[in-house]
Image (cartoon, rainbow, N blue to C red; front, side, top):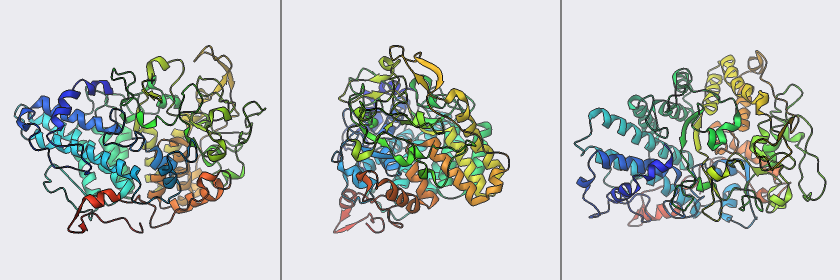
Length: 593
Protein backbone atom coordinates (compact mmCIF):
# COMPACT_ATOMS: atom_id res chain seq x y z
CA UNK A 1 0.00 0.00 0.00
CA UNK A 2 1.97 2.96 -1.28
CA UNK A 3 1.49 6.31 0.38
CA UNK A 4 -0.44 7.48 -2.69
CA UNK A 5 -3.23 5.14 -1.59
CA UNK A 6 -3.30 6.86 1.77
CA UNK A 7 -3.69 10.16 -0.03
CA UNK A 8 -6.87 9.06 -1.77
CA UNK A 9 -8.73 9.56 1.49
CA UNK A 10 -6.64 12.40 2.85
CA UNK A 11 -9.44 14.97 2.83
CA UNK A 12 -11.81 12.69 4.73
CA UNK A 13 -9.05 11.69 7.16
CA UNK A 14 -7.92 15.24 7.80
CA UNK A 15 -11.46 16.36 8.55
CA UNK A 16 -12.21 13.39 10.73
CA UNK A 17 -9.00 13.79 12.71
CA UNK A 18 -10.13 17.22 13.86
CA UNK A 19 -12.56 15.48 16.16
CA UNK A 20 -9.73 14.10 18.23
CA UNK A 21 -6.54 16.06 17.62
CA UNK A 22 -5.26 19.54 16.90
CA UNK A 23 -1.94 21.21 16.14
CA UNK A 24 -1.31 22.78 19.53
CA UNK A 25 1.97 22.32 21.38
CA UNK A 26 0.72 19.73 23.88
CA UNK A 27 1.89 16.17 23.22
CA UNK A 28 -1.74 15.02 23.29
CA UNK A 29 -4.53 17.53 23.13
CA UNK A 30 -8.06 17.08 24.35
CA UNK A 31 -10.61 16.62 21.56
CA UNK A 32 -11.24 19.74 19.53
CA UNK A 33 -14.66 20.66 20.80
CA UNK A 34 -17.18 21.49 18.10
CA UNK A 35 -14.86 20.72 15.19
CA UNK A 36 -17.08 17.99 13.81
CA UNK A 37 -19.85 15.80 15.14
CA UNK A 38 -18.24 12.34 15.65
CA UNK A 39 -21.42 10.69 14.40
CA UNK A 40 -20.64 11.98 10.91
CA UNK A 41 -17.59 9.72 10.73
CA UNK A 42 -18.74 6.94 13.07
CA UNK A 43 -19.12 4.53 10.19
CA UNK A 44 -16.93 2.15 8.25
CA UNK A 45 -15.68 4.76 5.77
CA UNK A 46 -14.87 7.22 8.53
CA UNK A 47 -13.08 4.63 10.67
CA UNK A 48 -11.06 3.38 7.72
CA UNK A 49 -10.10 6.98 6.95
CA UNK A 50 -8.91 7.44 10.52
CA UNK A 51 -6.91 4.21 10.24
CA UNK A 52 -5.25 5.51 7.10
CA UNK A 53 -4.38 8.60 9.10
CA UNK A 54 -2.77 6.45 11.78
CA UNK A 55 -0.62 4.79 9.10
CA UNK A 56 0.19 8.17 7.56
CA UNK A 57 1.81 9.27 10.84
CA UNK A 58 4.46 6.56 10.47
CA UNK A 59 6.76 8.83 8.49
CA UNK A 60 6.11 11.82 10.81
CA UNK A 61 6.06 14.11 7.77
CA UNK A 62 3.69 16.84 6.69
CA UNK A 63 3.87 19.27 3.81
CA UNK A 64 7.20 21.04 4.16
CA UNK A 65 7.86 20.11 7.82
CA UNK A 66 7.15 17.39 10.32
CA UNK A 67 3.51 16.69 11.14
CA UNK A 68 3.93 18.58 14.41
CA UNK A 69 6.26 21.33 13.20
CA UNK A 70 10.03 21.44 13.30
CA UNK A 71 12.54 20.23 10.76
CA UNK A 72 11.55 17.35 8.53
CA UNK A 73 14.50 15.33 9.80
CA UNK A 74 13.90 15.80 13.54
CA UNK A 75 11.38 12.95 13.72
CA UNK A 76 12.61 10.96 10.70
CA UNK A 77 11.30 7.38 10.97
CA UNK A 78 14.73 5.99 10.10
CA UNK A 79 16.05 7.36 13.42
CA UNK A 80 19.21 8.34 11.55
CA UNK A 81 20.05 10.87 14.25
CA UNK A 82 19.00 8.98 17.39
CA UNK A 83 19.95 5.47 16.29
CA UNK A 84 22.83 5.79 13.83
CA UNK A 85 24.60 9.10 14.53
CA UNK A 86 24.27 8.49 18.27
CA UNK A 87 25.29 4.86 17.72
CA UNK A 88 28.63 5.65 15.99
CA UNK A 89 27.47 4.45 12.56
CA UNK A 90 27.66 7.98 11.18
CA UNK A 91 28.81 11.52 11.78
CA UNK A 92 26.33 14.34 11.55
CA UNK A 93 28.23 15.56 8.49
CA UNK A 94 27.70 18.80 6.55
CA UNK A 95 29.37 21.80 8.19
CA UNK A 96 30.40 21.51 11.81
CA UNK A 97 28.13 24.45 12.67
CA UNK A 98 25.07 23.22 10.77
CA UNK A 99 22.19 21.79 12.83
CA UNK A 100 24.08 22.07 16.15
CA UNK A 101 21.33 20.22 18.03
CA UNK A 102 22.61 17.04 16.34
CA UNK A 103 26.15 17.72 17.55
CA UNK A 104 24.98 17.63 21.16
CA UNK A 105 23.12 14.37 20.57
CA UNK A 106 26.17 12.80 18.89
CA UNK A 107 28.42 13.78 21.81
CA UNK A 108 25.90 12.94 24.56
CA UNK A 109 25.86 16.45 25.93
CA UNK A 110 22.24 17.15 24.98
CA UNK A 111 19.81 18.48 27.56
CA UNK A 112 16.00 18.56 27.93
CA UNK A 113 15.77 21.84 26.00
CA UNK A 114 16.88 20.21 22.71
CA UNK A 115 13.99 20.88 20.33
CA UNK A 116 14.73 17.78 18.24
CA UNK A 117 13.65 15.57 21.15
CA UNK A 118 10.42 17.50 21.57
CA UNK A 119 9.60 17.07 17.88
CA UNK A 120 10.19 13.31 18.08
CA UNK A 121 8.08 13.03 21.25
CA UNK A 122 5.19 14.96 19.73
CA UNK A 123 5.31 13.07 16.44
CA UNK A 124 5.10 9.70 18.18
CA UNK A 125 2.23 10.81 20.39
CA UNK A 126 0.49 12.13 17.30
CA UNK A 127 0.60 8.56 16.01
CA UNK A 128 -0.68 7.26 19.35
CA UNK A 129 -3.53 9.77 19.24
CA UNK A 130 -4.54 8.73 15.74
CA UNK A 131 -4.53 5.04 16.65
CA UNK A 132 -6.59 5.78 19.75
CA UNK A 133 -9.09 7.71 17.64
CA UNK A 134 -9.62 4.64 15.47
CA UNK A 135 -10.25 2.42 18.50
CA UNK A 136 -12.61 4.93 20.07
CA UNK A 137 -14.72 5.78 17.05
CA UNK A 138 -14.93 2.18 15.88
CA UNK A 139 -17.07 1.33 18.89
CA UNK A 140 -19.74 3.79 17.74
CA UNK A 141 -19.92 2.53 14.15
CA UNK A 142 -22.88 0.27 13.40
CA UNK A 143 -21.97 -0.78 9.86
CA UNK A 144 -18.77 -2.65 10.74
CA UNK A 145 -18.94 -6.39 11.32
CA UNK A 146 -17.38 -7.96 14.38
CA UNK A 147 -14.72 -9.59 12.19
CA UNK A 148 -13.88 -6.28 10.57
CA UNK A 149 -13.67 -4.61 13.96
CA UNK A 150 -11.10 -7.15 15.09
CA UNK A 151 -9.00 -6.53 11.99
CA UNK A 152 -9.25 -2.74 12.32
CA UNK A 153 -8.46 -2.89 16.04
CA UNK A 154 -5.52 -5.19 15.29
CA UNK A 155 -4.04 -2.70 12.84
CA UNK A 156 -4.65 0.26 15.16
CA UNK A 157 -3.08 -1.53 18.11
CA UNK A 158 -0.13 -2.64 16.00
CA UNK A 159 0.47 0.98 15.06
CA UNK A 160 0.03 2.15 18.64
CA UNK A 161 2.49 -0.53 19.73
CA UNK A 162 5.01 0.80 17.21
CA UNK A 163 4.65 4.41 18.35
CA UNK A 164 5.00 3.46 21.99
CA UNK A 165 7.96 1.20 21.15
CA UNK A 166 9.70 4.23 19.67
CA UNK A 167 8.92 6.32 22.74
CA UNK A 168 10.01 3.56 25.13
CA UNK A 169 13.39 2.95 23.53
CA UNK A 170 14.00 6.70 23.23
CA UNK A 171 12.81 8.00 26.60
CA UNK A 172 12.10 4.87 28.71
CA UNK A 173 9.49 6.15 31.17
CA UNK A 174 6.67 7.74 29.19
CA UNK A 175 2.97 8.21 29.98
CA UNK A 176 0.48 5.70 28.61
CA UNK A 177 -2.52 7.21 26.86
CA UNK A 178 -5.11 4.91 25.31
CA UNK A 179 -8.60 5.18 23.85
CA UNK A 180 -10.17 5.18 27.32
CA UNK A 181 -8.08 8.04 28.71
CA UNK A 182 -9.98 11.21 29.55
CA UNK A 183 -7.38 13.00 31.66
CA UNK A 184 -4.36 13.50 29.43
CA UNK A 185 -2.19 14.85 32.24
CA UNK A 186 -0.80 11.40 32.99
CA UNK A 187 2.40 10.58 34.92
CA UNK A 188 5.31 8.62 33.49
CA UNK A 189 5.76 6.39 36.52
CA UNK A 190 4.82 3.07 34.91
CA UNK A 191 6.86 0.65 32.82
CA UNK A 192 4.78 0.35 29.63
CA UNK A 193 6.45 -2.76 28.18
CA UNK A 194 3.55 -5.02 29.27
CA UNK A 195 1.09 -2.76 27.44
CA UNK A 196 3.24 -2.69 24.31
CA UNK A 197 3.35 -6.49 24.47
CA UNK A 198 -0.44 -6.59 24.81
CA UNK A 199 -0.92 -4.41 21.72
CA UNK A 200 1.34 -6.57 19.57
CA UNK A 201 -0.17 -9.78 20.97
CA UNK A 202 -3.68 -8.55 20.15
CA UNK A 203 -2.54 -7.61 16.66
CA UNK A 204 -0.92 -11.00 16.15
CA UNK A 205 -4.04 -12.81 17.32
CA UNK A 206 -6.47 -10.81 15.20
CA UNK A 207 -4.74 -9.76 12.01
CA UNK A 208 -4.87 -11.89 8.87
CA UNK A 209 -1.86 -13.58 7.28
CA UNK A 210 -2.16 -11.34 4.23
CA UNK A 211 -3.72 -7.99 3.46
CA UNK A 212 -5.27 -6.47 0.37
CA UNK A 213 -2.70 -3.65 0.54
CA UNK A 214 0.95 -4.50 1.11
CA UNK A 215 1.59 -1.57 3.46
CA UNK A 216 -0.88 -2.80 6.07
CA UNK A 217 0.41 -4.75 9.05
CA UNK A 218 -0.35 -8.46 9.12
CA UNK A 219 -0.21 -11.19 11.75
CA UNK A 220 3.48 -11.91 11.16
CA UNK A 221 4.65 -8.31 11.32
CA UNK A 222 2.98 -8.15 14.73
CA UNK A 223 4.66 -11.40 15.79
CA UNK A 224 8.08 -10.11 14.74
CA UNK A 225 7.52 -6.85 16.59
CA UNK A 226 6.40 -8.74 19.69
CA UNK A 227 9.59 -10.80 19.52
CA UNK A 228 11.58 -7.61 19.24
CA UNK A 229 9.85 -6.21 22.34
CA UNK A 230 10.79 -9.38 24.21
CA UNK A 231 14.42 -8.87 23.16
CA UNK A 232 14.44 -5.37 24.62
CA UNK A 233 13.05 -6.83 27.86
CA UNK A 234 15.64 -9.64 27.84
CA UNK A 235 12.85 -12.24 27.70
CA UNK A 236 14.88 -14.56 25.52
CA UNK A 237 12.78 -17.71 25.82
CA UNK A 238 9.63 -15.81 24.82
CA UNK A 239 11.50 -14.11 21.99
CA UNK A 240 12.84 -17.44 20.69
CA UNK A 241 9.35 -18.94 20.66
CA UNK A 242 8.04 -15.97 18.71
CA UNK A 243 10.89 -15.90 16.20
CA UNK A 244 10.61 -19.66 15.64
CA UNK A 245 7.05 -19.09 14.44
CA UNK A 246 7.99 -16.10 12.29
CA UNK A 247 10.91 -17.91 10.65
CA UNK A 248 9.04 -21.12 9.90
CA UNK A 249 5.55 -19.81 9.07
CA UNK A 250 5.72 -16.07 8.48
CA UNK A 251 4.66 -14.40 5.25
CA UNK A 252 4.59 -10.81 4.08
CA UNK A 253 1.33 -8.88 3.81
CA UNK A 254 1.39 -9.65 0.08
CA UNK A 255 1.79 -13.38 0.73
CA UNK A 256 5.51 -14.00 0.18
CA UNK A 257 7.17 -16.55 2.47
CA UNK A 258 9.72 -14.70 4.59
CA UNK A 259 13.30 -15.13 3.42
CA UNK A 260 16.46 -13.28 2.47
CA UNK A 261 16.42 -11.78 -0.99
CA UNK A 262 19.34 -12.95 -3.13
CA UNK A 263 20.74 -9.46 -3.58
CA UNK A 264 21.51 -7.43 -0.46
CA UNK A 265 20.97 -4.19 -2.41
CA UNK A 266 17.37 -5.09 -3.22
CA UNK A 267 16.44 -4.07 0.32
CA UNK A 268 17.36 -0.49 -0.59
CA UNK A 269 15.96 -0.10 -4.09
CA UNK A 270 12.45 1.16 -4.80
CA UNK A 271 12.18 -1.09 -7.85
CA UNK A 272 12.54 -4.25 -5.72
CA UNK A 273 10.87 -3.30 -2.44
CA UNK A 274 8.02 -5.10 -0.66
CA UNK A 275 9.95 -8.29 -1.27
CA UNK A 276 10.13 -11.40 0.90
CA UNK A 277 12.60 -9.78 3.30
CA UNK A 278 10.32 -6.84 4.12
CA UNK A 279 8.54 -7.72 7.37
CA UNK A 280 7.08 -4.25 7.87
CA UNK A 281 7.87 -1.12 5.90
CA UNK A 282 6.71 2.48 5.73
CA UNK A 283 5.56 2.94 2.16
CA UNK A 284 7.20 5.81 0.30
CA UNK A 285 6.23 7.22 -3.08
CA UNK A 286 7.78 9.86 -5.32
CA UNK A 287 6.01 12.40 -7.50
CA UNK A 288 2.62 11.87 -5.90
CA UNK A 289 1.04 15.02 -7.28
CA UNK A 290 1.38 17.09 -4.11
CA UNK A 291 4.43 18.99 -5.43
CA UNK A 292 6.19 18.18 -2.15
CA UNK A 293 8.50 15.37 -1.05
CA UNK A 294 6.57 14.73 2.17
CA UNK A 295 5.70 11.20 1.04
CA UNK A 296 9.14 10.57 -0.48
CA UNK A 297 11.34 9.83 2.53
CA UNK A 298 11.52 13.49 3.44
CA UNK A 299 13.18 12.67 6.75
CA UNK A 300 16.37 11.77 4.83
CA UNK A 301 16.43 14.88 2.66
CA UNK A 302 19.66 16.23 4.20
CA UNK A 303 21.55 13.00 3.70
CA UNK A 304 22.78 13.11 0.10
CA UNK A 305 26.34 13.87 -1.01
CA UNK A 306 27.00 17.60 -1.31
CA UNK A 307 27.90 19.29 -4.61
CA UNK A 308 26.75 16.15 -6.40
CA UNK A 309 23.94 15.16 -8.77
CA UNK A 310 21.75 15.12 -5.63
CA UNK A 311 22.47 18.82 -4.82
CA UNK A 312 22.18 18.69 -1.06
CA UNK A 313 23.18 18.52 1.78
CA UNK A 314 26.15 16.46 2.93
CA UNK A 315 24.79 15.15 6.23
CA UNK A 316 24.98 11.56 7.53
CA UNK A 317 28.55 10.54 6.78
CA UNK A 318 29.58 7.01 7.80
CA UNK A 319 32.30 6.89 10.43
CA UNK A 320 35.85 5.59 10.05
CA UNK A 321 34.92 3.08 12.74
CA UNK A 322 32.04 1.71 10.69
CA UNK A 323 34.04 1.50 7.46
CA UNK A 324 36.90 -0.27 9.24
CA UNK A 325 34.45 -2.82 10.64
CA UNK A 326 34.08 -4.38 7.18
CA UNK A 327 37.72 -5.48 7.06
CA UNK A 328 37.98 -9.30 6.83
CA UNK A 329 40.83 -11.70 7.48
CA UNK A 330 42.19 -14.32 5.09
CA UNK A 331 39.40 -16.70 6.15
CA UNK A 332 36.76 -14.13 5.23
CA UNK A 333 35.76 -13.51 8.85
CA UNK A 334 35.55 -10.15 10.61
CA UNK A 335 38.00 -8.71 13.11
CA UNK A 336 35.67 -8.60 16.10
CA UNK A 337 37.93 -6.81 18.56
CA UNK A 338 40.69 -5.02 16.67
CA UNK A 339 39.22 -3.94 13.34
CA UNK A 340 40.51 -0.39 13.85
CA UNK A 341 44.06 -1.76 14.03
CA UNK A 342 43.89 -2.45 10.28
CA UNK A 343 41.96 0.62 9.09
CA UNK A 344 40.48 0.90 5.64
CA UNK A 345 42.59 3.05 3.33
CA UNK A 346 40.74 6.33 2.73
CA UNK A 347 41.18 9.68 1.00
CA UNK A 348 40.97 11.91 4.07
CA UNK A 349 42.90 15.09 3.26
CA UNK A 350 43.39 14.15 -0.40
CA UNK A 351 41.77 16.41 -2.99
CA UNK A 352 39.72 14.87 -5.77
CA UNK A 353 42.21 16.02 -8.42
CA UNK A 354 45.05 14.25 -6.64
CA UNK A 355 45.78 10.56 -7.23
CA UNK A 356 44.27 7.95 -4.93
CA UNK A 357 44.03 4.17 -5.11
CA UNK A 358 41.28 2.48 -3.05
CA UNK A 359 42.10 -0.12 -0.42
CA UNK A 360 43.25 -3.42 -1.87
CA UNK A 361 43.00 -5.59 1.24
CA UNK A 362 40.05 -7.98 1.88
CA UNK A 363 36.70 -6.47 2.81
CA UNK A 364 33.12 -7.61 3.33
CA UNK A 365 31.11 -6.72 0.18
CA UNK A 366 28.37 -5.13 2.30
CA UNK A 367 30.82 -2.27 2.82
CA UNK A 368 30.23 -0.99 -0.69
CA UNK A 369 26.44 -1.20 -0.53
CA UNK A 370 26.54 0.78 2.72
CA UNK A 371 29.44 3.25 2.61
CA UNK A 372 30.23 5.48 -0.36
CA UNK A 373 34.01 5.79 -0.71
CA UNK A 374 36.33 7.28 -3.27
CA UNK A 375 37.12 5.21 -6.35
CA UNK A 376 34.26 2.74 -5.81
CA UNK A 377 30.99 2.91 -7.81
CA UNK A 378 28.30 4.93 -6.06
CA UNK A 379 25.47 2.76 -7.34
CA UNK A 380 25.31 3.70 -11.05
CA UNK A 381 26.28 7.35 -10.61
CA UNK A 382 29.92 6.65 -11.43
CA UNK A 383 32.79 6.28 -9.00
CA UNK A 384 32.57 8.32 -5.81
CA UNK A 385 34.91 11.25 -6.55
CA UNK A 386 35.97 11.81 -2.96
CA UNK A 387 36.42 15.26 -1.46
CA UNK A 388 34.34 17.17 -4.01
CA UNK A 389 31.22 15.35 -2.75
CA UNK A 390 32.06 16.02 0.90
CA UNK A 391 30.96 19.34 2.35
CA UNK A 392 33.62 19.58 5.06
CA UNK A 393 35.89 16.56 5.03
CA UNK A 394 38.10 17.69 7.92
CA UNK A 395 35.05 17.75 10.23
CA UNK A 396 33.40 14.39 9.59
CA UNK A 397 35.54 12.32 7.27
CA UNK A 398 35.50 11.17 3.63
CA UNK A 399 32.52 8.82 3.42
CA UNK A 400 28.92 9.11 2.17
CA UNK A 401 25.85 7.12 3.21
CA UNK A 402 24.47 4.87 0.49
CA UNK A 403 21.45 2.77 1.50
CA UNK A 404 18.86 5.51 0.97
CA UNK A 405 20.19 6.64 -2.43
CA UNK A 406 18.14 6.11 -5.60
CA UNK A 407 19.68 4.79 -8.81
CA UNK A 408 20.46 7.03 -11.78
CA UNK A 409 18.76 4.71 -14.26
CA UNK A 410 15.41 4.91 -12.45
CA UNK A 411 15.69 8.41 -10.98
CA UNK A 412 12.86 9.77 -13.13
CA UNK A 413 10.50 7.30 -11.46
CA UNK A 414 11.86 6.87 -7.96
CA UNK A 415 13.38 10.24 -7.08
CA UNK A 416 11.38 13.33 -6.22
CA UNK A 417 12.82 16.76 -6.97
CA UNK A 418 9.94 18.93 -5.70
CA UNK A 419 12.02 20.51 -2.94
CA UNK A 420 15.41 22.09 -2.28
CA UNK A 421 16.71 18.61 -1.44
CA UNK A 422 15.71 15.32 -3.02
CA UNK A 423 13.23 12.72 -1.90
CA UNK A 424 12.93 9.10 -2.95
CA UNK A 425 10.43 6.27 -3.17
CA UNK A 426 12.67 3.87 -1.26
CA UNK A 427 10.62 2.39 1.58
CA UNK A 428 11.73 2.71 5.20
CA UNK A 429 11.88 -0.92 6.31
CA UNK A 430 11.31 -0.98 10.07
CA UNK A 431 11.90 -4.73 10.36
CA UNK A 432 13.44 -6.94 7.70
CA UNK A 433 13.98 -10.66 7.81
CA UNK A 434 17.75 -10.39 8.31
CA UNK A 435 17.00 -8.39 11.46
CA UNK A 436 14.67 -11.18 12.61
CA UNK A 437 17.30 -13.86 11.96
CA UNK A 438 19.94 -11.97 13.92
CA UNK A 439 17.59 -11.32 16.85
CA UNK A 440 16.72 -15.02 16.78
CA UNK A 441 20.44 -15.87 16.79
CA UNK A 442 20.92 -13.63 19.79
CA UNK A 443 18.03 -15.24 21.67
CA UNK A 444 19.36 -18.72 20.90
CA UNK A 445 22.85 -17.79 22.11
CA UNK A 446 21.47 -16.30 25.32
CA UNK A 447 19.70 -19.63 25.90
CA UNK A 448 22.87 -21.62 25.21
CA UNK A 449 21.85 -22.90 21.76
CA UNK A 450 25.04 -21.84 20.03
CA UNK A 451 24.81 -24.15 17.01
CA UNK A 452 21.36 -22.81 16.13
CA UNK A 453 22.56 -19.26 16.71
CA UNK A 454 25.41 -19.83 14.27
CA UNK A 455 23.02 -21.25 11.68
CA UNK A 456 20.95 -18.06 11.72
CA UNK A 457 24.05 -15.85 11.45
CA UNK A 458 25.44 -17.95 8.61
CA UNK A 459 22.24 -17.48 6.61
CA UNK A 460 22.89 -13.74 6.67
CA UNK A 461 26.60 -14.11 5.87
CA UNK A 462 25.95 -16.62 3.07
CA UNK A 463 23.73 -14.12 1.30
CA UNK A 464 26.44 -11.47 1.56
CA UNK A 465 29.08 -13.96 0.33
CA UNK A 466 27.21 -14.73 -2.88
CA UNK A 467 29.25 -13.10 -5.68
CA UNK A 468 26.10 -11.45 -7.04
CA UNK A 469 26.45 -9.14 -4.04
CA UNK A 470 29.82 -7.82 -5.15
CA UNK A 471 29.99 -4.26 -6.44
CA UNK A 472 31.57 -4.32 -9.89
CA UNK A 473 33.72 -1.77 -11.65
CA UNK A 474 31.73 0.94 -13.39
CA UNK A 475 33.28 2.21 -16.60
CA UNK A 476 30.51 3.81 -18.65
CA UNK A 477 28.36 6.42 -16.82
CA UNK A 478 26.40 6.97 -20.04
CA UNK A 479 24.88 3.51 -19.57
CA UNK A 480 23.23 3.35 -16.14
CA UNK A 481 22.81 -0.20 -14.84
CA UNK A 482 24.66 -1.66 -17.84
CA UNK A 483 27.94 0.22 -17.61
CA UNK A 484 29.56 -2.28 -15.24
CA UNK A 485 32.36 -4.75 -15.97
CA UNK A 486 32.58 -8.28 -14.62
CA UNK A 487 35.45 -7.27 -12.36
CA UNK A 488 34.73 -6.73 -8.65
CA UNK A 489 35.37 -3.16 -7.57
CA UNK A 490 37.35 -4.29 -4.51
CA UNK A 491 38.96 -7.33 -2.92
CA UNK A 492 35.84 -8.94 -1.50
CA UNK A 493 36.34 -11.88 0.85
CA UNK A 494 33.59 -13.09 3.17
CA UNK A 495 32.73 -16.54 4.44
CA UNK A 496 30.33 -18.24 6.80
CA UNK A 497 31.53 -19.40 10.21
CA UNK A 498 32.82 -23.02 10.03
CA UNK A 499 30.94 -25.82 11.80
CA UNK A 500 31.25 -25.70 15.57
CA UNK A 501 32.77 -22.22 15.57
CA UNK A 502 30.30 -20.59 17.99
CA UNK A 503 30.43 -23.58 20.32
CA UNK A 504 34.19 -23.24 20.39
CA UNK A 505 33.89 -19.54 21.20
CA UNK A 506 31.49 -20.06 24.08
CA UNK A 507 28.42 -17.98 24.87
CA UNK A 508 30.01 -14.60 25.54
CA UNK A 509 32.22 -14.53 22.45
CA UNK A 510 29.45 -15.99 20.28
CA UNK A 511 27.23 -13.11 21.38
CA UNK A 512 30.02 -10.71 20.47
CA UNK A 513 30.06 -12.18 16.96
CA UNK A 514 26.27 -11.83 16.69
CA UNK A 515 26.39 -8.23 17.90
CA UNK A 516 29.07 -7.49 15.30
CA UNK A 517 27.03 -9.13 12.56
CA UNK A 518 24.13 -6.82 13.39
CA UNK A 519 26.51 -3.87 13.04
CA UNK A 520 27.62 -5.03 9.58
CA UNK A 521 24.24 -6.06 8.24
CA UNK A 522 22.05 -3.28 9.66
CA UNK A 523 24.45 -0.34 9.54
CA UNK A 524 22.85 3.05 8.85
CA UNK A 525 19.36 1.63 9.39
CA UNK A 526 18.82 3.34 12.75
CA UNK A 527 19.33 0.33 15.06
CA UNK A 528 22.84 0.65 16.46
CA UNK A 529 22.42 2.95 19.48
CA UNK A 530 19.34 1.10 20.70
CA UNK A 531 21.11 -2.25 20.28
CA UNK A 532 24.10 -1.06 22.31
CA UNK A 533 21.80 0.11 25.10
CA UNK A 534 19.79 -3.11 25.31
CA UNK A 535 23.04 -5.11 25.35
CA UNK A 536 24.31 -3.01 28.26
CA UNK A 537 27.57 -2.15 26.50
CA UNK A 538 26.86 1.36 25.21
CA UNK A 539 29.36 3.00 27.57
CA UNK A 540 32.19 0.64 26.59
CA UNK A 541 31.60 0.74 22.84
CA UNK A 542 30.82 4.43 22.47
CA UNK A 543 33.60 5.70 24.70
CA UNK A 544 36.08 3.54 22.80
CA UNK A 545 34.66 5.03 19.61
CA UNK A 546 35.11 8.57 20.92
CA UNK A 547 38.70 7.78 21.87
CA UNK A 548 39.44 6.48 18.37
CA UNK A 549 37.31 8.65 16.11
CA UNK A 550 37.78 11.84 18.11
CA UNK A 551 41.49 11.74 17.36
CA UNK A 552 40.78 11.77 13.64
CA UNK A 553 37.98 14.33 13.25
CA UNK A 554 36.82 17.01 15.70
CA UNK A 555 33.05 16.65 15.61
CA UNK A 556 33.08 13.87 18.25
CA UNK A 557 36.29 14.81 20.02
CA UNK A 558 34.36 15.91 23.13
CA UNK A 559 32.04 12.89 23.17
CA UNK A 560 31.48 10.97 26.38
CA UNK A 561 28.80 8.44 27.26
CA UNK A 562 27.80 8.42 30.93
CA UNK A 563 26.51 5.07 32.15
CA UNK A 564 23.27 5.40 34.10
CA UNK A 565 22.30 8.53 32.20
CA UNK A 566 22.79 8.42 28.46
CA UNK A 567 21.02 5.12 27.83
CA UNK A 568 17.90 7.25 27.35
CA UNK A 569 17.27 10.72 26.04
CA UNK A 570 15.94 13.36 28.41
CA UNK A 571 12.21 13.95 28.64
CA UNK A 572 11.69 17.19 26.66
CA UNK A 573 11.47 20.15 29.01
CA UNK A 574 8.62 21.56 26.95
CA UNK A 575 6.52 18.50 27.84
CA UNK A 576 7.41 18.73 31.53
CA UNK A 577 6.36 22.37 31.50
CA UNK A 578 3.10 21.67 29.68
CA UNK A 579 2.16 19.03 32.23
CA UNK A 580 2.81 21.32 35.20
CA UNK A 581 -0.13 22.22 37.41
CA UNK A 582 0.27 24.31 40.58
CA UNK A 583 4.03 24.15 40.20
CA UNK A 584 4.24 20.35 39.94
CA UNK A 585 4.57 18.38 36.70
CA UNK A 586 3.04 14.97 36.10
CA UNK A 587 6.24 14.04 34.24
CA UNK A 588 9.45 13.05 35.99
CA UNK A 589 12.76 13.72 34.26
CA UNK A 590 15.05 10.80 33.46
CA UNK A 591 17.92 10.25 35.91
CA UNK A 592 20.93 12.61 35.94
CA UNK A 593 19.52 15.20 33.53
